[in-house]
Image (cartoon, rainbow, N blue to C red; front, side, top):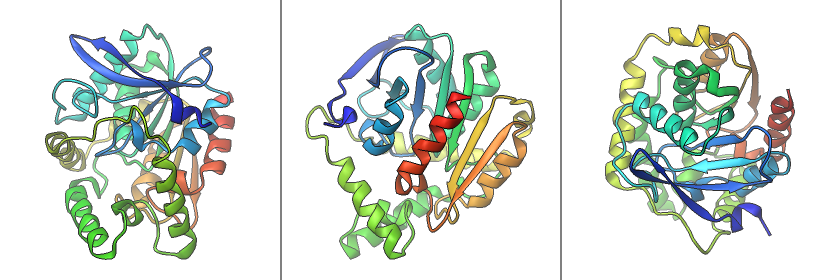
Length: 278
């Protein structure tokens, strides 16, 4: 049975607010904290990725403030989201963590590493972008267009948001969506419209910030990953991120987009574990 499928949903008090999280893999060593994408909650993590990484690492998946089953109201700035993530890590009594930030989570991870560098050892940035890069401000329109197309074609919006229209990529999309439905008990709470609105506000501000200068001082070892044709946030932003980071490795997967790490889950897991071993 998938370890992700059977992971218990736990809660921890973070400054008076209950944060929902799950742990997968044997406890020990430096934990890998997973920060997920816009509109996502715990059940949106691919079991193939989570279980693959958990074969070697202790993983912690979290819903930040106002997301999924966590309490409170989602903030509309990434700075506040990053502070919530740091407070969550501290509430668990952790001194050092590795980070896997996917999409919106990758933006949060950038700010965590910049504002609390001693908390972080290594970082994996997947399908994310630096401040000032094009794409985040139009996320709302992209989501709406994908939802309309999905309704007309009888598919899931992620078929169009995360994957390419090619047969191989769409086959990977269907497999990914099937894996997301494996867990049938203790499922997380879907995100609210209020949470999505706050996330979209933060994304619009992120694109307007033309000064990602703090990245040049982010010396943590970083693995930067994306597909070669990201339909949500252009892959050029991923390249800009990798170029701005002083200590980054870059992996671009072919015939794939925003969900490349799910399409190439075996390769992504292999590369990530090798990177985290240091």
